[in-house]
Length: 448
Image (cartoon, rainbow, N blue to C red; front, side, top):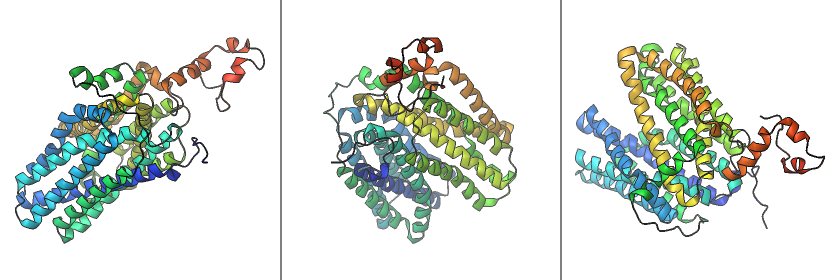
């Protein structure tokens, strides 16, 4: 007999999560390798910067158009099966790129087609992957699982491009073939995971069901506050879009320095994710999210004003670490306060807003820099983030008062009410009465 998992149980000892973690590493490494290979191959083939932009557009269009349908599919069908199918399709798309390159028939249009297929599969994979996690780990371990999953994503995001660039020296065919094998291996690992989930209700497809995720979020101020806070922080941030300008014209560090600057936020995010996978955000999670986003804004301001390469690296590392705290709180909160039969659609909306804000944030930063300069653009983003934090603390007190991420919304309400009760009301309880019994041993009565 095994001990019941608690918030102190190491997530690395949980076998279903181990399989999930490896599957995510394999799939993300494959995706990052393929992005590098496609970019190099398209530019070598056409010499057109516009075609590089069209590669990104070919992935964005299906993701944007299918995201709400993808959320419905994640709630209506077996999530493990959906995830496996998506990864097999991604593997076949990579195999098509490999065969086309080896056979000499791969044209610019064929590359766009395979990238479009990859984007469509990713549209279904992303919400399904996140919605699957609560079904494979006990709820006390969910915050650690979210952080642990983020370590897989960040580590693969750092290693994948480097590995893809290294292997590209032997030709794109090898890169695509390895990508295909990694996607298929990820699908196999997912098939080994035992997912605990009741048979999903087969709701008839209509607009009400399709937009149920948006309707649900509007009724949950804590979730709405978390998603919108993170969205606006990313939208106003956009410092990474200005890195080439900073590397060339402000810091004068060249291409190598640019690579280091680009890696810095991921290093900070990975370090923080590893820490959060070991030590959960057990108390005052809402306040910690606001603090993290504020630190994100301050780090953006420091980077904007810095003329020191080392200080700029440090600011970007802190920026990435703070962003990871916000990501873990937001994703865990969404999973904990959303019923299982709604997780796919709610996660899809979350993915849509956060993913879109990344691209719009880069556009905001770049377009503003065209008229005001890079420094003013990045500085305005950091100041704007701090203003959003102050405003959101007033608009979304429910998010500010979120305490324990491992508890459901219903369980949180009486805890908040007890902490907010007047001191004289609590003092009227007889010694050993209900107030003494109800307060958990780790609850700090001094917390307002």
